[in-house]
Image 1 (spheres, each protein chain N blue to C red):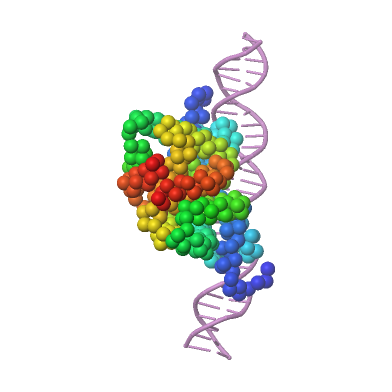
Image 2 (image 1 turned 30 degrees about the horizontal axis):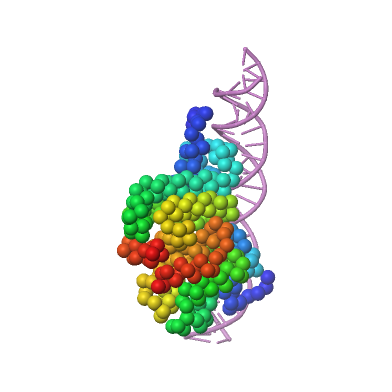
Length: 178
Length: 178
DNA sequence: CGGCGATGCGTACACTCGTACACATGGGAT
DNA sequence: ATCCCATGTGTACGAGTGTACGCATCGCCG
């Protein structure tokens, strides 16, 4: 392990943390497990991230960026004539079609804010940013409700182990969007 | 600690587990912390609940029963002429008015199913039971969507540290209920 | 009445964890 | 060229954890 002066080490530690959470859950996240996954010594993780909360903040922020990019790239989302509810339902379909793993991972990070106040500003960034994106197509209140319903639908799928029903999602999102 | 042959010991351990989760989160739940809270020796908790998952299942089930009873007692929910959306929004308002602590605790148990397959059947029981309750007022698909939106609204409040807006909730629930 | 199984109790072991600390190294400011 | 300090590395310690196991104690059933 002779790899000194690694300018991307911090980033690699964050990536490793995300992989660890994906594989073992937040409960399996420790300085040691991250160090092993990132192939760096223990002292290196504690040096860059004094606490696990700090590491979780960085991981959640990166996870948010990933999904935000997906939404930003959706052209139909910007087209004022497109069916907003259908487009959102389709996005969720694509989100789930890649296997549950990714959704579980990102939701676990997101939901961790429930008990970790340090994560709440990051979670708020996420909803605010998405709401702003959706506000180009509807009023802000409706945008927030669309996000809430999408969260709720995802939760039902993930928590109960059920299947995602895109037609159903489109119908209910449509009732909110009007 | 000379308290042998305690027929309610199992129940008291479950209550203690709920208190521990409320105070320290699931991360702070251990056989030892529960034993201390319930004032029983370590061996007693491991005897009644071989794993922490078993204990969580029992705790989640009890937590579900509490909330289900609240909904069952709501007469307006059974009155076909009452405003369903308004009634549900009011229930959530009452849910939050008692401080965030209870909501945080119950949601933490509920959301734990994301990473613990053993809890998923219990989470499914909860949504199925509530959906059935609501199905007396609307069709099943709408009932599930109402639950999803309520979950999403609660999440936004709890995760971002925001305030619950009952009028907003009523408006959006109304759009779904039609 | 006798014993057997369910329940309760205490302790010990091996393991992982966060944290702290001393030392090594070399990039960049001066 | 020199020196400071951010960064990297290895190790040790104490605390907490799940688990296992032996023994104690009574309720109940035959």
